[in-house]
Image (cartoon, rainbow, N blue to C red; front, side):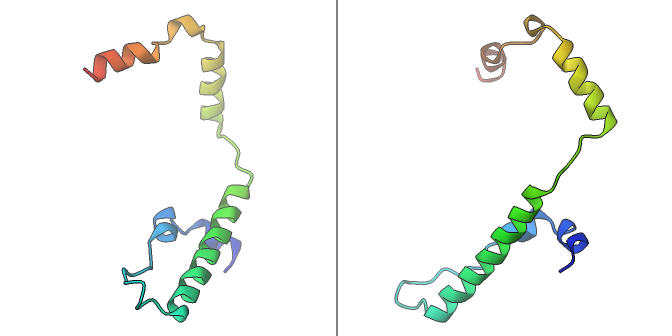
Length: 87
């Protein structure tokens, strides 16, 4: 798989479980091995995605810079938000 192919894979595809529900007696070593190999591939892909060096776009950088300049007193406290919406 090329790096460009890996980027196009959605997280939903990675996280789709392939393990079928089985009783402990009916699970064969082959099934367990297949599941482990599949999980290893998924973990490797997730590690690759996480390790990429992403950069914020200019709009996001400007918004972050403005938010950092804004005084903390102008923000609404978490407890006040909870009082309003979690009544």
